[in-house]
Amino acid sequence: MQHLFFHGPSGAGKSFAIARAAAEAGVTPAGFRSRKAADGAVYLGPAAGPFPLDAAHRVANVAVRPPVCDAARFDALGTALLASVRSGDFVLMDEIGFLERDAAAFSRRVLALLERTDIRIIGVCRADRDTPLLMRLRAHERVALQAVAPDAASRAAAYRAARALFASPAVPAP
Image (cartoon, rainbow, N blue to C red; front, side, top):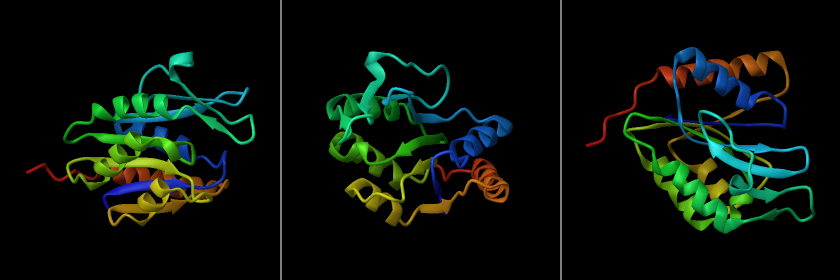
């Protein structure tokens, strides 16, 4: 295993386990995180630092059926957030779901990063959806998947797995 993705129901503690383990390990990840607002707006922001909840970072609305994603904005913002990844980085991808379905450039960038051995990726992905990106991510030989349930034992196991990943060195790029 080189990269680790958690999956499970909303509120199970996947993102919290990663954030806690990163903070305790002194790791500031590159990459992205998403946040859903109370009105159903979904925002994409940097993995670390202040999270921008503004129109420029709004990539989707999941309050409507079917959900609406601005694929062009997702592509531009998502690829920009992943462009800063450097050798030796820990990369956060929180979360890969169904909204990326039409964000082709973003999907290509995620898949290219999965091939790298000089970085470690930790993230959250949907297990209850099948999009081309999700299917390739879940089947990738360098990706380990771990289910997280909303109970203390499962959350503790996710935290330990995240800590172990943060303690593992990346293989330097050739």
